[in-house]
Image (cartoon, rainbow, N blue to C red; front, side, top):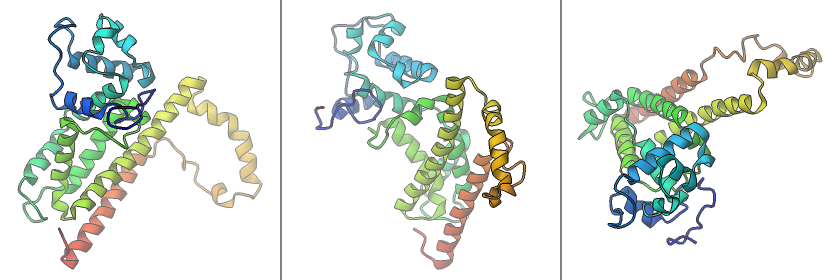
Length: 277
């Protein structure tokens, strides 16, 4: 059992599954390196940087204290003087990637939103903020696909995570919604992006595992599917256009535009009813 009463993860795939008190100390600067032990060249920052690089290249399962000691050219036990284990290291890795520079538009929208509590002529363009938030998150997931493999139900919030949330909320303030609803907007957008990114990542993984391209995979099924369509058992699918499942259709753009349109309807409804936050 971890010190906070939670069960420590054995595979490091769940944030907040280790010693959360220690993770918080490390994230917020309260966990300084002991004066004796590892050589000065080894730092917590270097450890986290190396862990993220390994996870990006080979997946989260490749991250271990032994592997990191090899990457950093130090003894495995030296790493434990900085971070208790993989579960706590995962908390630091997550905060690191969440803290990567955000696109300028979101920063600007958040800056404009400072001191703006309701929608109005001077409110930031929340549509642009939603658009930028979605695109930056999708880009982050593509750079770090291992993010899709971890359980973030109990994220240990560090300064980078809070900064990202602050920026997102600032950009959305012009919607004039209640605070729980603003969080709902963020969750809705992130869930959409994660679902799409997971589908894309799974497709790429299937190619790596099988050695078959998508085209080769579907070509093998084509004779059976064609007979099924001619059977009359699937009338709706049989009459669909040939480009229905074309890779050229941009599902991200389609979904994002529909999400923004739905949010616009809610904002307009609240404004007409005079029930903005």
